Amino acid sequence: MDFSHFRDIPIIDSHVHFVHPERMDELLALMDEAHHSRANLVCIPNPDATTHNPAALYFKEHHPDRVYLSGALEYASALADRAHASQILAGQVPALKARGFDGLKLIEGKPQVRKLLPLPLDGPEYAGLWAALESEQFPVVCHVADPDEFWDAERCPDWARSGGWDYSDSSYPSKEDLYTEMDHILARHPNLKITFAHFYFLSTDLARAARFLDAHPNVCFDLAPHIGMYHDFSRDPGSARDFFLRYSDRILYGTDMDTRVLARGAEGLAFMRSIPWLIRSFLETPGSFTINGSELNGLGLPPRVLEQIYHANFERIYHP
Ligand SMILES: [Zn+2]
Image (tube, rainbow, N blue to C red; front, top):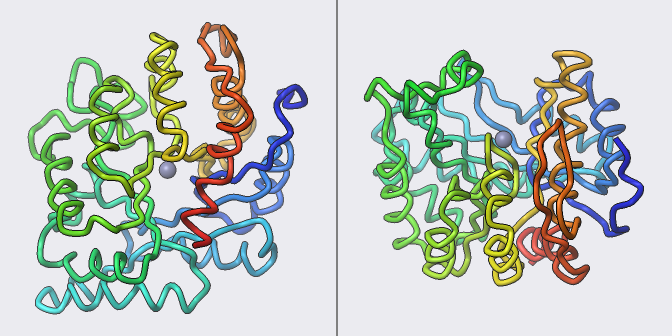
């Protein structure tokens, strides 16, 4: 894909999954091709109680100038000692900092994970963690909820179902349950430096997204795509453009690039390449553009706004 026509502005990709140390050079090549100066490696826990943290530390050791690290929590000791879970999880904030992490990543608000780890985000086990994140001003990227289709057996795509993301059997928390948990946390901790991944899954409702950002002045959204997100924005480009101009200091560029997708081979690589091209085309193109046979409408944002979304907002949060 050709990236040469895009604006020459430094880019920090705030949302990248790096799981395979042996794919570091491949990921670096992709970053170079898309003109990403740095990536924020967002680590998550694995179901076997390991995490992506060691892979991220490996990358930083080899290329400290190309990455930021957002660490994952480790749950084994907290789950074994629920009475002290709050202190145990909170203690991981200074520990991650000391190991060179720049922030935290929480996938724990994704319905599948929220069901596996049966701890309400606003419950007592996490109370110390939120307080520590706020007092240390340690930035956190949170994945809360998922696309609406995943709760609807008729509309849930096959690839989502095979990933374990069909939430239609009512054993999963609803999207609104998860938002309510988050609302409680934001009310208790208004100074959290928190970025909600995937536009907080509100791309179909920009009015609600605006009310949410107005109510929580320290909250940001990232632009990591989810199914349909850019089609949603594209449907009413005038409103989307107004939103992006008005909240230009609250939106972070992010792709969700993932070495687990690269591991699928040529098809995975082509898909990874297409994401930065899609997002940059959407932000920079005045008028329509075509990707994979779909016509989308771009926003043609001015350079001042692109500077904010591409790197300045991230730098404000991660380099106080
Ligand atoms: Zn992600």
